[in-house]
Length: 285
Image (tube, rainbow, N blue to C red; front, side, top):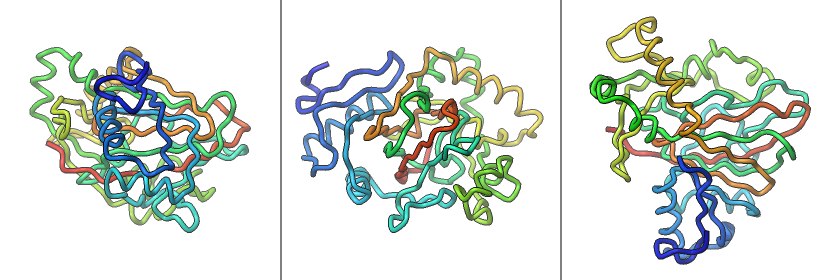
């Protein structure tokens, strides 16, 4: 797709009918003009996740790009890049069995003010495998029945970091091999609406996720499980998704308020090194 009236300086090609778009015609290592930045922000709002290929960024340029969009949130648990604490490393070595992010999730929903988005940059990836799948939480909400929307509209849910990053984390491999750290900092519990109104687009989106949501407010874990399991299966429906194949120099920038993502663990024996910067958000309503 060539440049359009809405995007005169960049090329925007949808990745799927549900969400996602590949952006061409921009070098993110260069100082972006205000017009180009505005077009990128428009595409981000329209498509919820935007992709770039063939980018060549130093760590500082990655940081500079992120800071054009907002304030960087320094991750508590991921191993940081040496000399660049604002960049979290998302790594799987060739001899490691488990990857990071192999469950549908929204980054840092356990924070009282969850992250706005994440900018993930591919440093080293396998030729085959290691794709990331994204799902639209706008479509997940909009496709629910009116009765379900009415019920969910009055609910809030608890999200927590404790079971994912604390001393009782189910996956200890990431601590043992040094990819995660600081389990003593996993003390976050946050209450959010199950259906949020996006602060920029005004669209309603489903806001629970498999990794961090614990239970509905006022419900027990056991009572919450059947409905949460339904919502998790519903949100992962194929027609809500797009899939992105990584190449060295690829970037994905996703909206945590409107999407889930899932990192496929299908590249055993191969190394994958990604650099992630996460941006601060605003309170959710």
